[in-house]
Image (cartoon, rainbow, N blue to C red):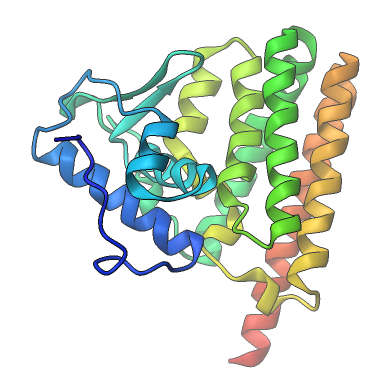
Length: 251
């Protein structure tokens, strides 16, 4: 029997991508906690999980991001995703699952501005062609999600994760992996309903900001990459503040 049993269509009706990702994450979590996926063991490949669960690659990546945020697994670039030892889960770091309020999100963005601005600069200076290709792949995945009207959180997180991996510094990589998709504000709040904008226009702006970051990294322009990442995260902060003001006005 496979580690992950594929539910029948009758048992699990098709729902939106985020709901499916939660189901896949729950299935994997149950296997980990039951000892069927032991500490140190490698998760099935994305393709295996896609086949066994009948979901898209985007859904699988979203599920794995959730496991990373929960401290259950870690992804080793170019190797795979592995189950963590219980004592290694979260350690003394904060729990990303507790990041839920607007105040938490704004505080996290302040932290990310420092962390990811330097991450982008180092990525521009150190990235290999393979690492640049991974950043561009994540950028294309994000664009494809927008075109298909699918949830883009996993692709968004993968873009930031690929930049951290391109630094060659495991501490940047570990921190991004620990945060998981908590780094994506719209994962926690439906910003498109709070700001005076459509979801399409909001995500189009995020895509353009990602392109600016990627272009600077491709040029090897460290300062340009830092500026582009800082602009992206400052814009995210501004969008959150507008959402907070709109929510307060409605209350």
